[in-house]
Image 1 (cartoon, rainbow, N blue to C red):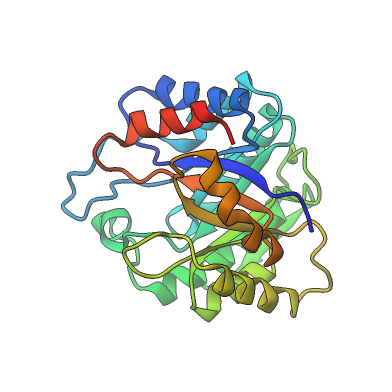
Image 2: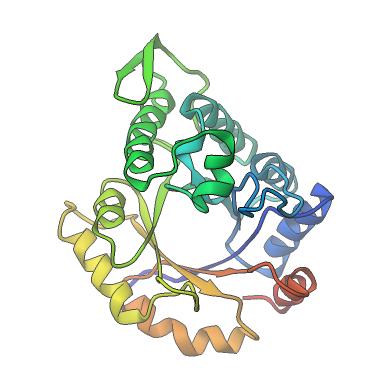
Length: 280
């Protein structure tokens, strides 16, 4: 059983990028293992969402001021990204950080606020196809080899991208998806990690039994699970002791990461700062 790494995640919301960057530095200083940001355009279906900052630029600021923690997005909706631009952004972050980048991916939500407003596809099937094609394109461009692609949604003439990411064969890709949906589990088995999310309006954390079932389904389709990450997407704990009381059953179910995820609401910003100060 691998050691359970600990991380903090939060919305990419705010007026001042330095606030999010300073918190990332504090996450490392407090002893956590990773810092992750959401990736949104608007977030509100009214079109009048919160102030939103670009997560990749903020993470670059954090990378330049840290040396140990993993840095990435959970999740980047690949269907609304040009994958070749995303390849450049992620490679640059991986090089700034010395090989610490992680790319969390999904089909994205909410479908209207982050897609429909801009004329992008809103149906889940199309976005799932775009996600699968986009991941294939990313892997090809990250390789540093001459690469071309002809899919339904993306087409690339022969091209070679350099420099490559520090991490080989690629930057780790963690696939997020809502349980018990089958497609995210199948997709996650082809990549480097899974972030299962509970359905409904309560905690985003599935119970340990459902988590373990999803990990077992992935393990059954892979040659091995060496280096594979299974991520608990959890609510923010009131104290480190609360995590200790919960984590053992998830670790036994195959979890490798426990990431506490701030949700925007009253006093969410001072609340996550207070939580980071307590340490893992």
